Length: 585
Image 1: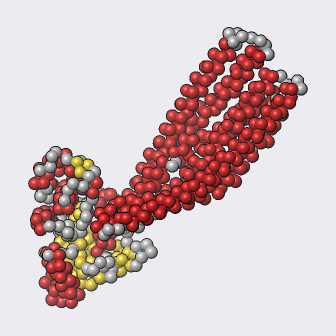
Image 2 (image 1 turned 120 degrees about the horizontal axis):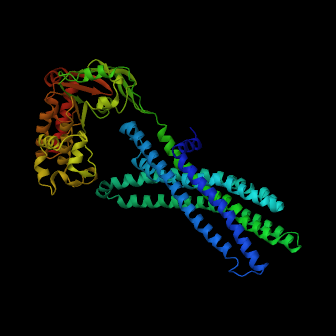
Image 3 (image 1 turned 45 degrees about the horizontal axis):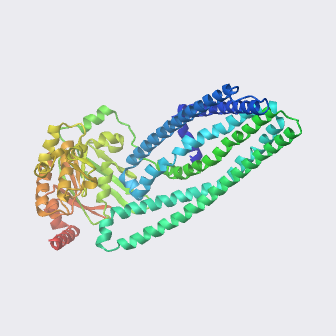
């Protein structure tokens, strides 16, 4: 879909509000014609009919009424346009946000988060003037001048002819100049997106920059990027001001031509003053919608630049889950006392533009079994987790859950069966209770507190000022790493799913936190299938099944004792793990 079509397609959401705004603007245009007629009559009566101001007070009162009505209509039109743009922004932002959610962290993780933030915030806001100003102006630029011509031609065909001939010159020059500005605006938005992404990433990594003493260097980089953005902004403004100058010049020359023609005919007595003055008053108002359109045309170019990134994001394909199996069959298969068994059948996966992450993997995870995935970085451990979490879909082969193809299960239904505890959990700005309830938003207070107790969270929560109602900052600001990890485990307890996926939840923690979390994991692992991306010896040794991965392939499977006897690759890897842990100690 092209950008103009994308912008036009959103109009259906606000058609009623736009129609109201345009209708009010047209009615205001009719009142403007009446205003010119009342003013022309009042001045004609005072100057040429020698009447007093008292005698023409009916014209003055009529003018006052028109002024008031036009003010009310202008306010109402502005409100209608505001509601239209607000509705567009709200729905489009929601649509983009949901699309990003459906794409998942793997797809969206290829781009800096600042780029998405810029699109969702500044990009959406840039559309306001397009829908609230430009679109109504586009309709009024035709309707209001035509209405004025209806009154002009019967009284002064020459002035009407001048207006008809000169009016098309304004949009022609506007388009000619605007074409270049449109390209500059697109380029400018891409620069802004890159700058926003770089700045946000730098702020998020400020602690690291301070530690390595490179914050001053990054500040210089930001200054250079900002200066380049300022220069490019000024180049866009130069073209914009040139466009405005051309529009104002053409409108002024056109009004001057009308005034000259009327002036000569009044001088030679070929025209009545009342009609000539009425036509002269309407001349600026005839060109005003054209000039407004020229002004708001820049809003269109800004919207085109902002919409480019939105369209690119919305056109990123979402992995589609085919619903082939009935919901009753799925429900029966997933909700069994025996638990979930998972089977990979010749599964392959390749990240876009990257190496093969999994290559013809065939493994089976039995129900209520503890599985450890081990291997070097890039072996395929995280890819297996991403496939099971529904973040990506296999390019070849199939994954069976209790005999059902995972692709036949609705993604939301499947995720209800899975709990995930990453190595670095994300806590959101909100209360402790809100963060725990992410595992089950409808859970009662009693169930939420029970989950916190099972995750060994009670001791530090009770010490907080407002206990479970205590607010924490983004990313768990105010809590330690161990406390954050325990809240993540409380989410898993509260969700209570038959499948649990862990990314070595005890890594990078102090001894006390590690002990508490290990106790919670032991409790949580009872009577459910647990798949752990393992980095620690204790986790590996206690697993029922160890899957050794290397370069996207399964090297060997078995228990710790069996692999230690029969697999040199596994033995070498364990020695590497032991050496790493000794270094940390």
